[in-house]
Image (cartoon, rainbow, N blue to C red):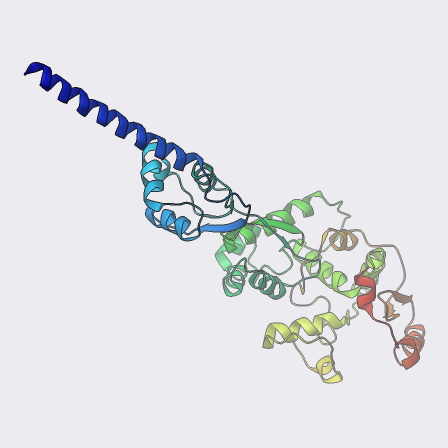
Length: 351
């Protein structure tokens, strides 16, 4: 009798061992085998607050793992159920479950380059952000006009952050918050501004940024910025109006939301607080976000006696000292159709 019971016991143990071995082998195969031998990149998103069960089901639905149930069991055994992090990840169908879990637990989301060109205004930055699917335009603009945030970042009471959203290329993910981007842009401005050589000036920082934003919009030729800045500095010293066309366009944008490309005589004569044909000295505030070169040109303008400049229609300008000479250049380059034919300032900026 004892011999029989012993045999039954040993059989049960053997069955358990074989079953355990089978399960272990199946688990091993699942854990270290990929669902496909053909490489194919798949963008996989772990949304905020997603449970591991949902993540596993999404992975199975996208064909990245063979079984959500098995993945969940293995993840529990290895502690991965509490490690997955929100993000957008680049996976491949040849990846094994262990590799997939390591990636979606890393928090290293897919990166995107977000480039803000010099001279872009905050409305254009907001539109670029939305167009590239990297943020909400309305939220970005709300933050740019948040008085508490402006005060915290700049230690000044300003109406908005126009001029302080430093133009360069930023590395972002789909989950980078708009506030994080705004803070980074302003912090970059502060860093660059501190690094620039400062010549003694009566202008405040905000006035420097305002003037630099006008300099940035007035030329497509980088080498001209110091001369453009000198013209505006000379006009300010003589209490002359700056008479800069881009300030009119920005004023219309700020008041109506309309981004006009060209101005009319009516626009020139119509008052708005940015229109430097109608207001004395500087406009109400910055009209764009200037880059390092425009800021430096404003802080260290060229030495000149020029009071006027007129476009050659291809991105560069003719500089003059007297109104008479200026009018002569206007007649030559602006009123003569042959001097404008086939030319555009965009040709210069595209180089």
